[in-house]
Amino acid sequence: MDSPLTLIICGASGDLTARKLVPSLYRLACKNRLPAEGRIVGVARSAFSDAAFRDKMAAAVREHAAREWLPERWEAFARRLFYVAADATKPEGLANLSAWLKEKEGGAGGRRLFYLAVAPDLYGGIVSSLAAAGLLREEGGWRRLVIEKPFGRDLASARTLNESIRSQLREEQIYRIDHYLGKDTVQNILVLRFANILFEPLWNSQYIDHVQITVAEKVALEGRGAYYDQAGVLRDMFQNHLLQLLTLVAMEPPARFAADPLRNEKVKVLDAIEPLDDAEAGRQLVRGQYAGYRGEKGVPPTSKTPTYAALRLGINNWRWRGVPFYLRSGKALKGRLSEVVVQFHCPPHLMFPVGDGGTMQCNRLALCIQPDEGIHVSFQSKVPDQEGMVMRPSDLEFHYGHAYKNLPIPESYERLLLDAMHGDASLFMRSDEIERAWAIMDPFIRASESASATAPEEYAVGSDGPAGANAFLDRDGRAWLSLCHH
Ligand code: BG6
Image (cartoon, rainbow, N blue to C red; front, side, top):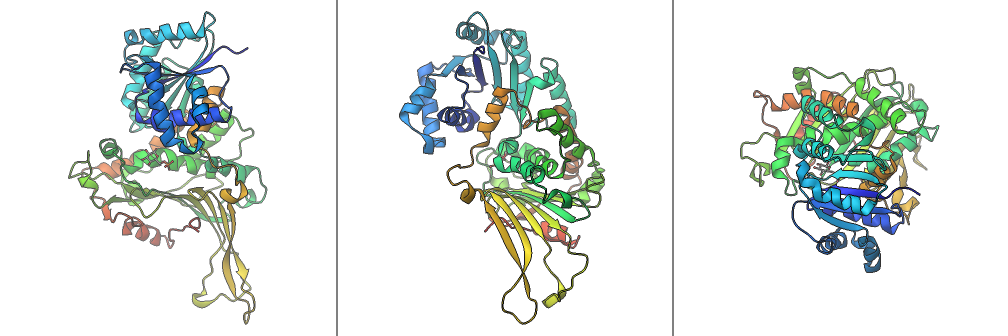
């Protein structure tokens, strides 16, 4: 029999625990996916009894997993839930936790997954105190660590953080979350590309004109003004989520779906993106800030932090040379929409007369990440019963909501928590991946933050973003596309 498994959540009084972690664990329990012998212990400084912590988490689950709430299921789940008051930033503050683990695990020890749901500047210190308190010694079972973004704020600080954590843990013990990788539709990029023969032969510069990756948000700061103003959209969304989407779209097929073969290929893509010099990065970047941002709580009235950005990257390898990848993301926009659009070239010769204006829409494929998850392919069709050959673009559509009616798309933390418990790091980021992503983003961030940088262009709340983003693509003779909003 396996030794007992304990998930230790440091930062149990915080938002992430209440909004995402415990509701996701509860849903996993409802699906009978949690290891039978598993326990969850919340750790924070404030004093709570197990019962009080359970009550607080029950309220969180009723709010955030309302659809799945069933009192008897909660009762069964809550029996696995505990609380220990401890100060994880100091080795001596961890005595309670050590004693608790010893008692619950029994003499033979157990397996421990530490989840740091705390402010990122505490990561290094907590890992050192866990080590100093002896809690990371692999006695009686493995030790693993899960941490959340941001991993540093540039290449130099990410390196320092990686070194500090790796002085206590081996790389394969560290699970760095990018919650986009936990989304089914993001994993489906791999399935579409590598479990089908139809698309892959066309997936290169010979057939693809360019790729667009959009992550648009309707929400604004949601009370995180102080954090956000220090980060801005380039750190908050591009260094992680948008570059992760790009690597999945652009990578070569790995030989196996396993952590290292997969991540090796992702790193190769990032390696093929040459970091620009700051001046060039400035030219390949558009920044915007929504009207009213500087009046938000936690934001200084003079802030030049971008809440929107669009930029162009090139991948210098055989497959992608000459194919621009346009990335854009922003807050307080018209709607919530994450989508990858692949624009194919037009046929080399067209025997049909093209209509007014003499242009034709060439094939497009869209991967709809959220909210209407699916895939759209746009192609030309003959309009029936017309004089001559009249063509019009038509859409082939696949919607998860139709195809898998009884299988709603789960919260991405469910998959990620379970993978970390099972020791599968495929959907987590390796240190070299993170560092390489910072190396790509740093010149854009410096261009955005330099003293001589202009203020970002203002855009209206509920709009498509700054006008400059349209002019940016116009310069290349292209326009932003969206197929997913039907
Ligand atoms: C987070 C960012 O990583 O991703 C947030 O910090 C953003 O600012 C969020 O809102 C978007 O995630 P999702 O899953 O809602 O697209």
